[in-house]
Image (tube, rainbow, N blue to C red; front, side):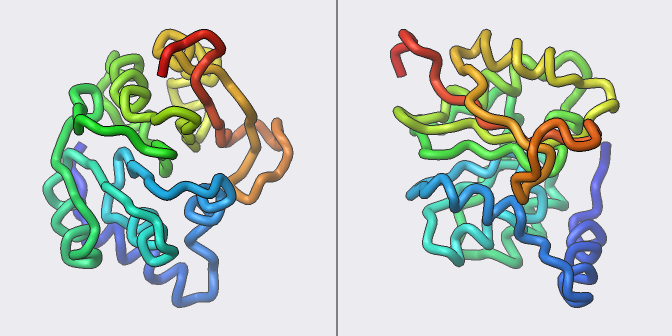
Length: 186
């Protein structure tokens, strides 16, 4: 899939200028009180830039040149990395690894387990993998939870929205928090 970062960002800019809160993901992550966040599949950097504005050290990773170009323009102080999430190896861990904005749905077919494993490698001790994506689009929660389990993570909590509406809501969206399983060396 090819993206146009400027057009994608313009959608969120228009929502924000119309008074809509476009920072639900950042607010959700801030409730976990992280000092560091890896924004995996960061797109144009909307979430990463907001987290940095709130004092978090953030690294954004995406593999789309147009999205990263927009992110670099909008957030020059944030660290941006061009990488496939399935191959990601930054050599460090984070308090929170975030996959917001349907990231698992936009990865190449058959790579979901590798993407989850690539993200899990970057979850630090006591940290969390947080993801939010639409359901009914070819990647279900059972498969996602199994990929997390294979990577050594277990479900801690799940909500229907970024503003913590109780799960299951209308079952069209899920926000999940996974942490290291008991007995797994972090």
